[in-house]
Image (tube, rainbow over all chains, first blue to last red; front, side, top):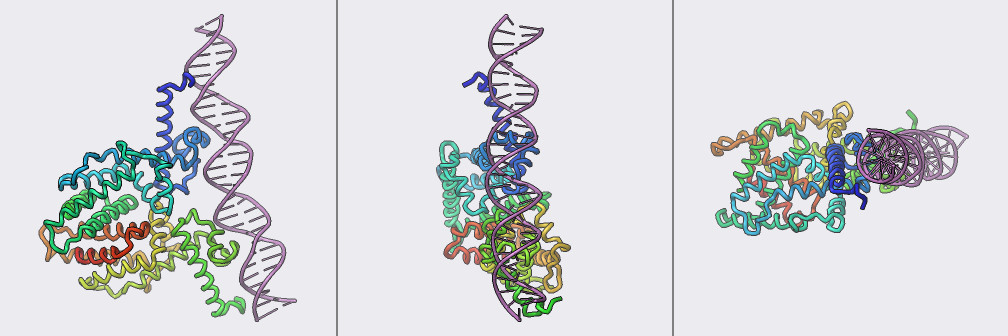
Length: 210
Length: 210
DNA sequence: TAACTTTGACCGACCGTTCAATCAAAGAGC
DNA sequence: GCTCTTTGATTGAACGGTCGGTCAAAGTTA
């Protein structure tokens, strides 16, 4: 260890990495991973092409770092205290949090949607050996599965107060598909969601599925 | 015009073009437009790389031809007689037709979803000067707008028999978003839709939004 | 033979990646 | 404070490889 590699220099290095990752995320989400060149990223980050490789091993490594950071940020906003069942109030909060994340982490979601549409890429990139993301000590995959289970239980619990032809599985599919469809439209064709449609969709979802 | 370019030879030429387009569509939808190479398309079509350029000007021209063909096929299945208002029975038929198309033209929809997520690509490719698609003499854009108008009118007409807090615009957004979300999940992660979930989603949509 | 189809070696362009050279800044010796 | 040394961040030309696209030549058909 040289005297230069102190905590202060590590911090500066992290700041530079953040700068590059921000520029890359913007390009990846708008232009696409394959279509984005290293030169383009470097130009937007205000650095030279070669310097990128001092901070990231490769273009793929850069992508992995971006996804890792975003997942950690996003899953960190959810309160992991929900070991017990979901109450209607918590369900409503969940919806509002999800929509807030669409707004705040817009570029990440665009990138993620794109990546999930490439066969195999998602599984390879997010395999636990390649990218061991964990939220409060819980691996990402387990965290996601818990969330889905929680939602499934919530819709199952609504069966008592619903009619006889209520199907919790179908109901949950309708719910999740509505959110997915909204995300797609909002992220890639925002001109339709100017004004108050964003909020109206939240209220409509809560009213219908809470 | 040479004597070889008779109707019979034109037909053979069209068959060859179809062969190439089929192979290209499969690759574009699974691997992506940028990631698919001409060599790969040629290999899957059973021809040489150079021959592709006897039938299509460029890779982009090939993509445009595929989209053109698919749009014509798909919009042709819809009965364009709906100048008047949509009845509930017609609305139900519409849903069933849309879902049938998801099944039958699966690869095209995958490709289309991908393309719509590239900023500017969709507008450039489908501009009327570059790709003058028309369905029964009506330009594609006009045809789509008519469909949306028809749906909007249908949801507006339901206001009379609904409660006071019924919002036709929001209701239509919920409806279209649910379909979009289903399409995304079905097209890119079909393992979740094995079994009868496909049919169950159709019935649930009809029951809720008819 | 003449007209047309088909091939695949080849081209220039551009990609991600490397690396020798540069340079500003911090340390060391005085 | 001044000079010299050391450091590692930074640059951009260059590299190997691959891409979309071209074309002379071989093959095919009539």
